[in-house]
Image 1 (spheres, rainbow, N blue to C red):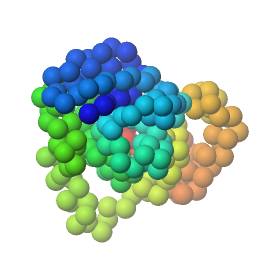
Image 2 (image 1 turned 90 degrees about the horizontal axis):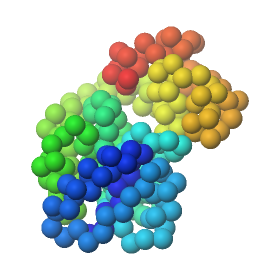
Image 3 (image 1 turned 120 degrees about the horizontal axis):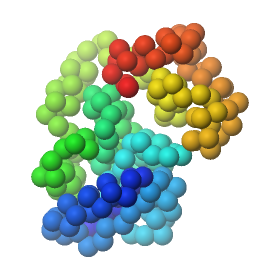
Length: 208
């Protein structure tokens, strides 16, 4: 199995590499510091498993996940994140991720997740499994942010964290005017009018 680690922090990649070396059957471990580098390595290499951080500079992990599954649908992707599991994990799995793991998980859990996913299964924690079961049984699950696109959702979080249009544009390599257009779409879809309402919504729904 050839694994690609995509995380913008070198110390995190080093730690993950050391853990993955314990896994029998791993022949190659590659590294990427952002989404574009990961996509480039996937184009030029022969990877069949990706450990992908959700929070990346430029393209978000969710956007990279979409691109990976569209171009290489057979590659297994295990998402890593510090974000609240119940909100981001469900979205990631809907986009094709084979699992979702918190970065504060023990190394044994990471190895268990890699083993299960590489065998063709999906890995979610017990808490997430309960949450998914509840959501499937509830007619009230559809929340306002569920109708947002991946990019809209990404900008929603950045706005809720107090970032300016220019700051968001610089981070995503788009113009502040484009960010403003996204903001207008988000506000319209979610029936909100001010950034304070947006931030309150994200806090109440544990998105930040």
